[in-house]
Every structure is written in structure tokens, then in C-alpha cells.
Length: 223
Image (cartoon, rainbow, N blue to C red):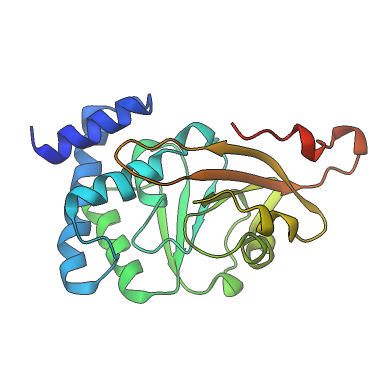
């Protein structure tokens, strides 16, 4: 067993994420491709392959418990994070990754081909011009502020769909600036092994038409 495999399995176990041998094999194959391509194309600022395990793979999969069965869009995906690890772990889930950087989407397309990810669609383009969807889940790991995320991707969200924003520190100021018609539905503190600093998942959605279905802000505790 390689040190990377041991690290990945230990950290996923700490998150209580069950993984098959085939999934581990594909996650490590993606990791190897990312480390290889990164040396030539600068796909990520994280240079250390061991650090990529925790800061990229495990971080991406930390939101897995909150991913449902609806088609998912990873906007501003970069080298495919979190979309590709999620597609590996959920082969029945339709995952679309979107990024405007051609070298990063070319890398994603190579990963899709080499790993046989039939549930993954890679789109090279700007989010404003994207006409795919609609998507029941729109995830962003390092794309934009909450306001920009909602405004730029609202036309891609299915009725009743949610925005899944992965953030560091809890973004109080960004939440206060959400446009009318949107609200925080839930917030989860992500406790990631092998990393320092805070991580949060914010789930945003439309404000229900009936006031009785809305959740008062004081009842939105941080898990």
C-alpha cells in the first residue's frame, strides 16, 4: 500500500465515508494525474502531492453526505474539484464541471477518458454563457462570493434546487448581502483531518412562497 493510499483511506475513515477498492483506485489515479499535470500546467497552487490528498481529495469529499441524487454542476471547477472526486464516489450521479480555463478543462477531459467516468460532462466556457441544465445542485469550492455565485448561476438552477457553497471561515458578511429571494437553508462545519483552519458548507436556496415553510435565521444553527 502506498503512503498516499494509506493517507486517503485513513482520512476518509475519519470522516466516516465508506469507499470501495475501485473508488480508491480511481481517486488515486486522479491524484496521480493531477500531480503529474500540475508540474507542467500549474493547475493548482498546492504543489505537494501529499497535501493534495487532504486539501483537494478529502476536502472535496467532505460534502458527500449532503449530496443528493439531483444533477450536479460544479462551477469554477478548476482541475475538477470537487466535481471529479464526487463523480468517482457517486457513479450514478450526473456531474457537470464548468470552467473558463482551457488547460484545466483539457485536464478534466483527459481524466474523464482515462478513468472511464461516463457520468461526468466537462464544459469549457463562462458560466454566464452556459445553457446546460437545469441542475438540482450547484456547488462552488473556490469560485466566487455567495452573491456572485447566486447571481451568476441562478439561470442554471432547477426549481427547488440548492447552491452548495464551500467556504473557509463562516461568511457572515456575504450572507447578509444575499439578493432577495434567497436564504441560507443550512450550515455545516466541516472537520477535516490533516488540515488546519475552518471549513464550512453553506446550503442556499430560494425563499419558499409560503411564510409557514420558511426557517427563521435564529433557527439556522451551525452544525
